[in-house]
Amino acid sequence: MPSSVLADVRLLTESFDAGAELARFTAAQVEAGGIASFLGQVRAGGGVEALELRHYGPLTLPGMEALAAEAQRRWTLEGLLMIHRSGEMVPGDPIVLVAAAARHRRDAFAAAEFAMDHLKSESWFWKREKVGGQWSWIEPRPVDFEDKRRWDAAG
Amino acid sequence: MPSSVLADVRLLTESFDAGAELARFTAAQVEAGGIASFLGQVRAGGGVEALELRHYGPLTLPGMEALAAEAQRRWTLEGLLMIHRSGEMVPGDPIVLVAAAARHRRDAFAAAEFAMDHLKSESWFWKREKVGGQWSWIEPRPVDFEDKRRWDAAG
Amino acid sequence: MAKLVFLGRLEDVAGGAEREVPGGPLAGVLVTLESDLAAALSADRIRLALNGTLVSDRNAIVLGDGDELAFLPPVSGG
Amino acid sequence: MAKLVFLGRLEDVAGGAEREVPGGPLAGVLVTLESDLAAALSADRIRLALNGTLVSDRNAIVLGDGDELAFLPPVSGG
View 1: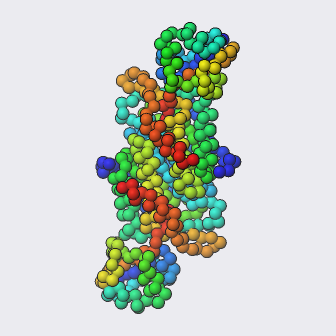
View 2 (view 1 turned 60 degrees about the vertical axis):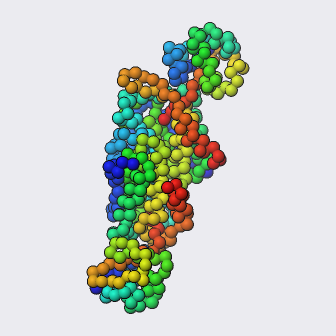
View 3 (view 1 turned 180 degrees about the vertical axis):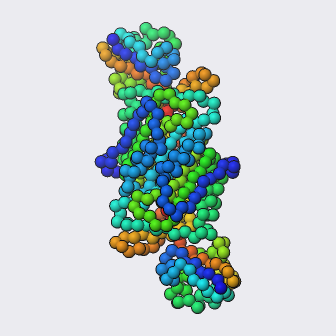
């Protein structure tokens, strides 16, 4: 893909308005036929009172930027948005927003899903949850590695 | 999936605010961990001055509703939004918006992509484009059928 | 009278989106139309819906009073 | 002095996110720490970053003045 297309990659320590961010991104993508997006948020109703993500400054944002560049290399995109929260969140708060704009629907979907799978399994975030007033660190789930591995053969 | 989860399926003859629709849908999905969406819009810059979609009342919306039910049957969803335009549109106008909310990311992505593939290849719409002041009807593209066929084996 | 509905490019061939025709077997209705329109409507890839229901055997169609028969070319949506 | 940075659950083991230590080879630094912390930091699945760069051979690490060494457990993001 033309590397001249800039990706908008951000690591935020305060909450953000996912709808407004997506609307702003979409408004700039007049030459894209389609925009695929994924919003991950803190689920309500699972007993989790709060969720905290920690990051490591020297690695986390650079890693996200490398991931965005890889998505742009693999698919022909008109634009790419990748926003990830760090810090403490409560149910309903957005955690991650990825959007990929492309001329072709398949590229947009694949790039968004690729970005999410790698953000989940490879990005430098550590998560803990507060349940019943007690914080505990969350171990990575095997399914996250499987999700990422789907892409390894796809070159 | 529980068929008690209602899908919001609409065929619109006037333009709509895709960002506002997605924000409204998202706000209701507090129990979903994630929301995958796709927005298809009339591309600018391709020389197309206007695009018109025609539908057939007795078939088009019922077909979309059947498609939504099939997506809900195949994946475990918390909510499903499917909006499709009919009528005349200009570059930048939204054509179709699909959003799927689910506890699991994979379900949300798959349902949204499944819905898009079938809307493109099977739904009762006929498209014409205005280029250089002349309207001409668009034939279906083989790739649309291939996109749909991907799902046939997945049961 | 019955109503024929023409979708997509068939509307251009017919010169309009709809047409009122006397009832009867479909083959008998088609022969009363312009020959280019009758040919276009008879193409294999044109599907038919009678009163909103897809019909697989077009030879079985007999139009009655108030019936609506739609001619559906391959779709090209989204 | 050099700085050790503990991510994820290692922060709980260490009782803080960071610690200042005298420089030297990593093995020599670790033996000055509480034994449970030293064990946690030595686990195979803990990756290390020296001044923001991942290091594959932990035996080669010698901390100098102003160096920052981060201990990175398996990630659990998003």
